[in-house]
Image 1 (cartoon, rainbow, N blue to C red):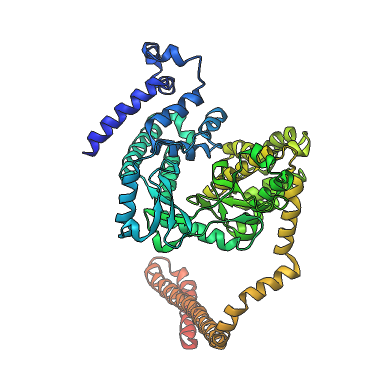
Image 2 (cartoon, rainbow, N blue to C red):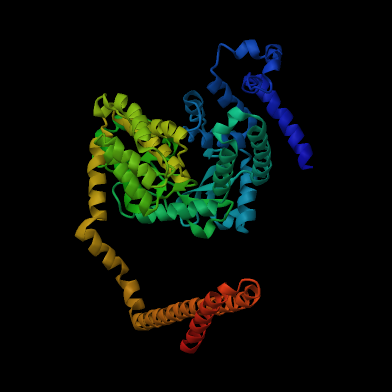
Length: 543
């Protein structure tokens, strides 16, 4: 059955590839290069060749292939370290504007998932979708207590569709890895694995709710960011009910200006939110594109962001945080050697990397960018160019760093749209310096002591016993070592004893044999033999 599905799905994919003249990606490979003339027989070849770029044609093809390929395109758009710029930019334009499925079907799915009639949960449930995406769609509703909420419902049979298409993508990736040398540098298997991981995470709405709850706790009562409340009593793996928010979409620049929003402060707060999530909380919303960000109108001079859609989040460990902060400051100071050393020390580059060569590659990327005014420098683009330059040094880019770079590009892009004069460096540098100061010095030491004190106090009664065990173990080890040394000495003495006895016996026997023919040698051989025997006997008595 799976083979039949693969066959028909491949036929559909081939048709779409031909329709958008994407067969050129295949016919230009070494294996199919002799057959490139077949591209001219494609009826759509001449219609689209000069009208759309290859990136536009690829984006439209993914839209035609359905929601799974749309989401895959969105995930791929984040791997700008691997994809050519023109394709990555077009894939980033993929929107979640997918035709909605029936509201009656959504209603039935909610009832089946929560095992309750809709009337027992909501006063009202709008059958018309408020928004429709590739994985799920959202309906407006009102709870029995009168609170306005939104209900997110997975698409019907979406899990089976994803499993089938991921299986197909894995097959295609394996073929590409095996037979297409040029494709290997794009790491198709790695890309498919990343797509699969992201899609499976987004299929679990319980996980998304947990992400939202964590972010809400991190920014509780914060003037920077508001996260809607999750109603866990009415949520499951397939259904998520959360507070309905009110605000102006971040990309409605004209509407924000019309209400008198402080645009400069709004742009700076976006950067502050990003660095707060990354360095204070080590937990960040990794899908903050304009469609997922709103602005509250409650305080125009002190604007507050509102975020939705928490399917993709990222986190950094303390080591990555430290190296990232030091990297950013080293970039700002143009200390390229320090940047190269940090990349190797953090494990992002192999330990045998030539620091001087990587330093030269970084300088070639950064110097043209730093010649511009600070307000025109995009740190997101700088990271992107650095990742691309580091590819030939076999950089090991962790998934969380890719998410971080994508998020920074989104936030920085939004900030520049809101306030074109935004200077990310002026906003970020003091934040990074303050964070690094907190990580070193007496204050940081006392903070870590205070954090660990409860654990230490719990373990304190066990310390005398542990010390005794260590000392006892050390004593036993020392005794064992002394015993080993004695045995080695004894074995050496025993070997010498046996050697001397054997040597003495050999000389005495030789004197008897040779004495019959050469009598003059007898006294010498007998003397040496007796001395050797005597030394062997003495060593036996000592041991």
